[in-house]
Length: 338
Length: 261
Image (tube, rainbow over all chains, first blue to last red; front, side, top):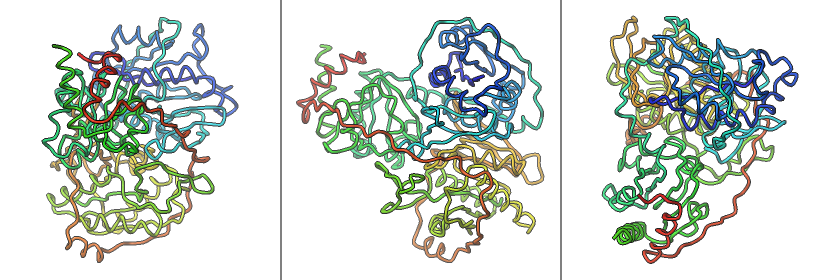
């Protein structure tokens, strides 16, 4: 059995990265099972009447009708819905134990490679005595392949336990709908121990969420790097952000210099994004930054150096000073609008 | 509050890497070394928290003899002393082993009367990106654990050893946690700016006591079979032009994608 931890947002919708993880689980279900000891023959508790290979999902907290529909379109046959009044504020240990309680003895448990997915899978791995592989991008009969060194290299490995615990790297695959099913929903009221609640969040401040959710949800992101020159050099790129109804993303150099807040950082230690278009202005393309933009569908570079990694990896590029070029782009957009 | 910060010597890479002969690691020749950016923030948080509570900061690493450089780098910004668990082959240690080694040190020190109230690590190491050593360590020590934390404020807590309030970024915004000590906390970059070493800091760092131990043999080992490199991407870039004159061509592309408002 392949079980996916599904993250939902505050409106109850399935997070994009979780939709990716569900798709990954469905596409690779047979291969993941073949990697289990004895080829997964001991795989327990298949639900009768569901298509073989269809993943099951686990959702903690509120479950919206929209999320059920979406998971059905993504091919999820069963949703395990875990609820408990004490689980409303996040507690990794309590959530992890809830997942352990429904996880199969033999099978694959996976989550998306978000901070929460990573944290929960690590807790589950310890509690079940299993190993864990973070940021898996592919799987074949030889084993798992996961990102290391910020995505510049891959590690090939096998987890030799009965339960394979892993996270799927952001944008390892695109969400893909399949013949829709109506998922069976199993509701669970959980038993939560005091011990597991000792690290629960005491408070969350939702208003701060927009800081990064704008960046990860935007269809267009304008990236700004060292080439911007100073704290005051963002005028043109911010105007372009506005024309695109998009978001500003910056490199680590920019946050390191204190020019912009960390919430806007894109890359290995910032947000990983998958916009329709990413316009990198004055960003040379350090691997730590490239790790965050692998999901961009179209990559445009504006850079003075034609040999820069960012230019070489881009779909389109303009060679020149970003202030001049972006300024001219803004002017052209204004002119076309009349 | 006495704080242990666990750091890791990693190659300082900005571009493409090549593999070593055995293809089980990357070729580090010609590369400088550093610690992960999450860990630099963990060191900074430790220094601030220890200063506020009148405690001491100890940095620990499991690595080759040269990893003493990273311990001294932490000492140069204010860590009081260091612990080097030396191994010629750090790649032989899996996340379970690393957690075990750190837990043994924490317990040994406690037996000698040097208890750590707080153990800080980075969320994940920039090279292996395992995302699990802090959590495995916490279970090993039976301490509570938090991850993705950006700032800390000491509190009285309900335990004799006090507590700490920790702030991190969750999927729906900032999250605040309050835990009793001792605890394990994994730090994410972004809450504090790591300070730069001063000249006097560097001088002091040379004299900072570093306790050295030989690493035990790894137990669980590393599940790594080998490393692989992504297929080389040939550039398929279309150069739209040079300078401001190319702006209309770029706007054409944006219109085609349909992202102009």
